[in-house]
Amino acid sequence: MEKQENKFGFTSFAENWNGRLAMLGFIITIATELMTGKGILAQLGLM
Image (cartoon, rainbow, N blue to C red; front, top):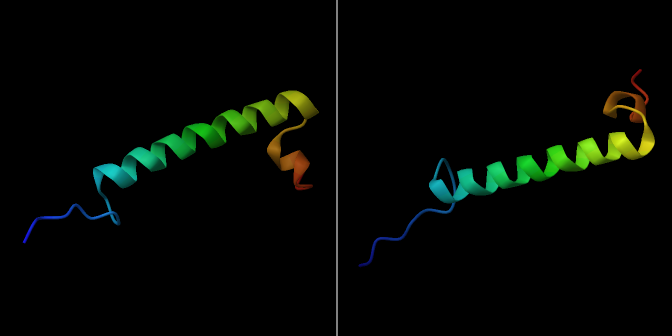
């Protein structure tokens, strides 16, 4: 039986995707702040 790499848990595959999505979220947050002139807390009505 061939050894299969797990797709769940702390694997290289999962960590790569986690990092990519975190970078994408950070860029979207910065772009939104630049377009609206408000921070994320102000947009959510918390400040």
